[in-house]
Length: 249
Image (cartoon, rainbow, N blue to C red; front, side, top):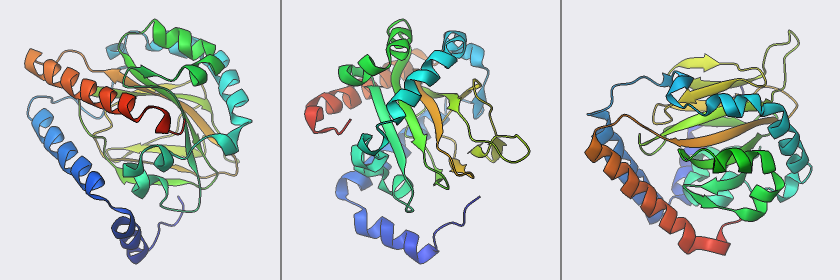
């Protein structure tokens, strides 16, 4: 794992780039997590059966991979995550290495131009009503995404590995660490997990790691919590629509 930034450097990044909007985002996320934690007791990693369409995505992974590699040829034009969401500056711009995101859909709001470049993903997402967001995540060689937590438990994270660098012994060189457990996943593997648990990622190789990230509606919650989740999702979707063309995708 790469050496982390010094504590003073991390503090400078946080204080220099923190905004009232970022602080409000963090506060709201903390309140939501507390509320959901009182009513959901599942662990950090879930059985993929909790997302019935997972198998369809896994079967299609070679075609999705081909689409992702075609997108990767335009890597310099793919925005860094903090260029899309400034609130993510601390985890995206924490070092001199890139974490780029090619967003095809966000909280139900499609980005047609990007979807048109990935027809397999577009078809799968259209046929999977529980999939709210779909993005290709490109992690540069040596990049470390520091420990962080997602905002609320109304969604689950699907993680389909498309292109995985390997170490000398043939094992995956990029690591996803969730709730203290490390996952080194081969190409074509799918993991369903709750990103409100502390997690981090690092790419210990000299090649780009590519995965398909999905935000998936969580089922099986109390009815009132489902209503709350739908409201949160609706507010986020509205914010995305309002930002519209200002989002660099």
